[in-house]
Image (tube, rainbow, N blue to C red; front, side):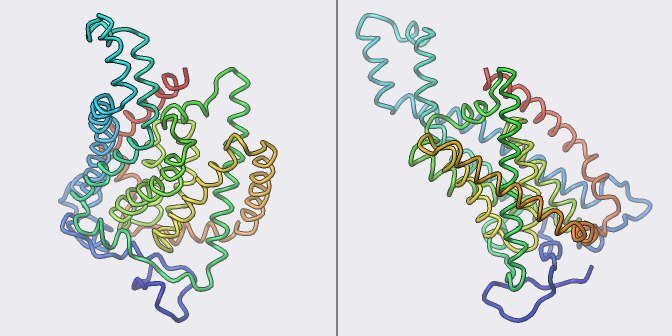
Length: 372
């Protein structure tokens, strides 16, 4: 693969049709060798000590730490603040204690638990945003100043590649029809998989705060984390490896298998866009996808409108797949790594295996608990 130099949107001139830029960024202090030096470890050096092995260890430990920070630490802190500051909760507790009940008895009452869950759910989006911010901060450990510089700003001019961006957007929108169809089929069994996502996000998703969070803030934070920090940390080991790995971690980040499958496919598309264009374009696609889902999922929107829109997008996606059927193998070949067997090396890392296994169990449990 020929080495290229990243350019900004302001730079003009003809460029090659498709040049992966991120794969050739200079490794930071946490990377032991240059990307082209990772192709073969010396015979006397154990494979587990390769730069890829160590980078995967760093990424997975930070990923696990970020998930714990979001789901446990931030959730506990936010719960304490909400209970202490929410006026409705304080009125409820004060009213019960003024009637002669002890605070312990009130808190142990199932009715109190139900009321607190409803009130905490009203702050679900805010808790998600704070949790994502806490998780992103941990990536400073491996990305350092690049987390707030090149991970966000590196970009290439689109030039004559608008068709690629348009195809990526249509494909992402078309996937939502498949998700809706699967949702409808599963619902026939009496289990509503879409309720899992709603319960995890909270009851404020249909409000203005929910719209701002789902369409503007959360997509940016997720793109920054996965298509920024994770993708660029692993990019020296090949586009295919970096894109697929970040998509897999992005899928598990959603904490339920139902949405995770959709997130994995979308993560692949967004990863390709971020790798070959910039984070701003993957963010634009992510935000647009969330906005259409929010819009057509609104209670005032006729159901037929959503089905019609996403059906057209799905039909266009099929046309795009047929049109680009000969291009995909070339993209896969172009994204091949100079590192020997990056998937074998990276995915056999004990940290990767253990954390992915734990995340899979968590997703299964959340499907049962949040869906009940």
